[in-house]
Length: 93
Image 1 (cartoon, rainbow, N blue to C red):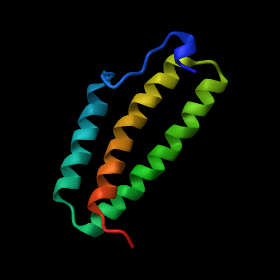
Image 2 (tube, one colour):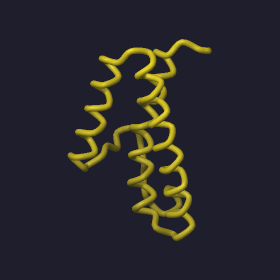
Image 3 (cartoon, rainbow, N blue to C red):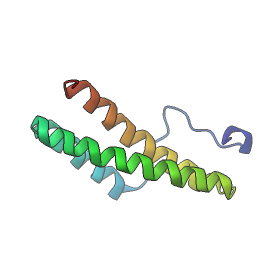
Image 4 (cartoon, helix red, strand yellow):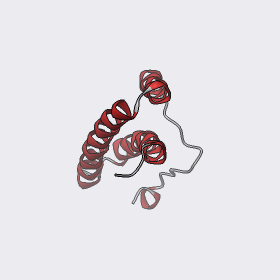
């Protein structure tokens, strides 16, 4: 839908918000130093954030606010990358 609006969201798109980028760096540092139980807690938090972002993205598309949808999608990408990393680290149950 973003492409239809002339908004490109490629692999090279990054977040411009320094506070958000700092938060992502801090989460990555937590992941690097965490025990399995702590990793599971982090993953649970990340999944909640991803769910919230999914709802926000849907709402922005519904309201035709494509620039905000793009911003939420960029954040979703960062959190999803952490979630994917956690899936590789945490042993399956």
